[in-house]
Length: 162
Image (tube, rainbow, N blue to C red; front, side):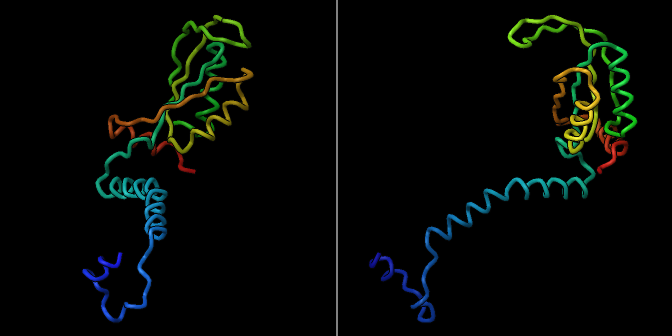
């Protein structure tokens, strides 16, 4: 270390000042790593606002399985009445195989495809669980990565932020 200070002497004003240690460097790097997702999200939102482009993951499709068509229609209508979605498809009956309480079960179900804001998925899930007749309803979602920009804007216009 002595050799380094001889090759790179500090200016006279800084002779008594401590140099930043590894701890400070690690702290700064750690803060950058922790704030990266937030900073990246803000950069995407700013880019979207300036260019009018879609931010991947802003909207989602939620899948909700229902026992029959009447229950599916009732849940779909309730979701729409609460403005938790812009659009709900009610897909026709399909067969399902699954394990329930250790046993292989087979049934028929109706599937809802719910188009909404990703920020509404938690509220949507809580609401559907409160009105769904199943003990443990299937409610899963996938973010929308890409799509027709006009349609994606329409989803956002029809589902309030808060």
